[in-house]
Length: 154
Image (cartoon, rainbow, N blue to C red; front, side):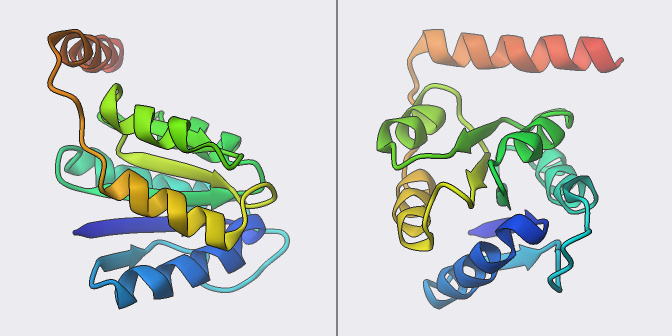
């Protein structure tokens, strides 16, 4: 499985730990930065790179992105066609499961100020191993998102 990672300074330590853990689990990781800690960096520079990569292959690739709350990072990622980013900022497994099952989310944005590395690992593992439900209503809704987004950007 190919997983794109990105963060700014607020999630830098989380990204580093998660990258090492994912690789130890046999997953392929592409790190879009930040590559060094810089308290003055800006998350859009890194998040856009990961989101662009997922946008190119939204059905087969995914990303895990980090920030202080994860909210701004998800907003940035969701600007890309085909990207479905969800925010995790609490130890709430239902968010992770439903984001995949109902919305076929392909980007998980984690609020590093609110989610420990250990909890992040637990939720990432669940997220990576949960698949979209095939119920017609979920497929229909997700297709509408894609159609409306493509029409908007056309």
